[in-house]
Image 1 (cartoon, rainbow, N blue to C red):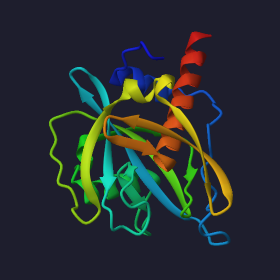
Image 2: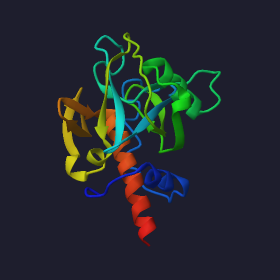
Image 3: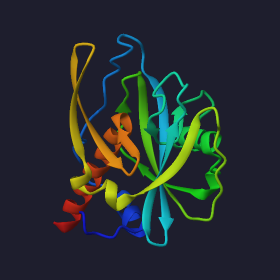
Image 4: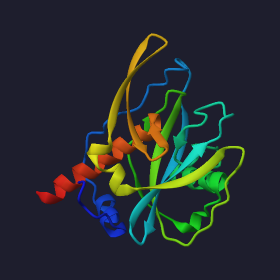
Length: 207
């Protein structure tokens, strides 16, 4: 898929008639809070229509946060009782974190849920955003926001697999380093699932 030019119409089509696919990972299995109930959450995978191609918007979390401090992530967070759906959670949290108004977001679907090491059951919601739009970052949670070309993220040559031993456990994770940003952990895991989803749709369309 490295040479393909991705468009918003192409992405909408893939989510409009999805075929079954095998996700790369279901997540990290709540390793840090074993026995505790999972906490539902949603993130937005914000795909932006730029003149030179689609990009994906990420945030870098501030260093003082309790969970996933300093890491690259999608905007989103824990579900609240008043949220009507996973989509609603993702849009509300995105608006709170980076000031992206929900009317700018065209939700086109979601990929399979992901369990984080910190005990969140996360639904990644995919949305298309057409500029212009304004951002207003929550300085307590978000250190910066930046974009990465979707073509880079869907190019298997940019996917790195790493093994690490932490507290006696051997874990493998994917990373997608881009310039000065090290995208890894749950965010990279969800991107790998998006990659698997797109690959399955391409193979299904070719039949």
